[in-house]
Image (cartoon, rainbow, N blue to C red; front, side, top):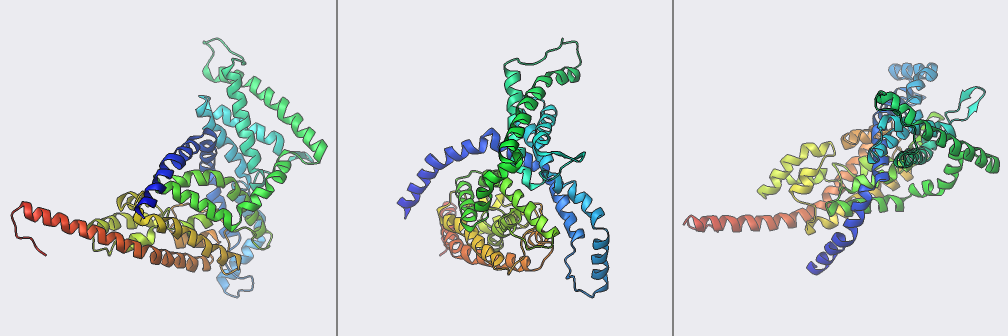
Length: 442
């Protein structure tokens, strides 16, 4: 067993860690992640508006308060939808600017100017004018992949032109803001002269503009991302990287965010249309069923540690229980520790995968409502699960089932580790007694 563990550690250290480290530091991955983080506040508030627009009451209810709320929502639906449409409904605008601004820092470009250039690039291909009005069809989840591509393309064009001095330079006496405005002229022209003809050509050949064509190309990937094997693979990668001490969640969420947001946008559109919610694997599913208390679903473990006979583990439990309620579990991961601890390898990997399987089938069979809202990842599990499903109660039950399953799986491994520590504590106490010349207690 020891030899197998040593071999596994060597593979992780020599093969997995270098690759994951490079991916985690890759400028496009980090820029995409930063872009989604920048857009997150707008999307969370926009998602929260769904609670007011679609209150969690049956349309057949006779309760006065619920009936009044439903009637108010029906009467003023258009007005109530405005904050949602201008937050979640235009998420790709925030994402586009965020990605380009982050990528600009890698090239020592001005983030504001680069963000605006990216916004123009996205609008140029994704906002066709119809009857004198801009179409918003691709401002939500349908345009996410286009926003990512145009943000990277426009920033790289700007960086290339500046790096090769293909720019308009004004004398040093000219104010910085004015000089920067002239500096961006050539990149703007290059973007227009490349993206707009390309968009027209693709439309002439296929009948689809760029964002529509991109969605057609990535649709198999989007569909594949919403399957149980995709969930298990994402969890497995995240857990193995974390066990090696690498922040696997940042890498996995950086890759999965575009797919999650595209699927969440479809779920919200289905909810607004009164249709069945189609997608399961979105961020709320990841946060509130698979990672309860943080990566590895360690909140139940924190509660178990509170009752441990080992002083060390009991202390870590006291330190980690409250942060764990808000999905912050570094005290548990590095204090117990779990990271690179062979005793906890199996439960750390398997607990979220078992939770993923339980949650998947519960949602797939219609036993638990699906996610329609984006919630802060620090929201306590049962509350966040309910909030994400428009305040349904079944996700709360599902969350507690996952917590109970996690506790059951962690318990035998905790007992084994606890015995090791107790033996070490007893040996240490014996040494101290011998050093002090005191009689050794049994």
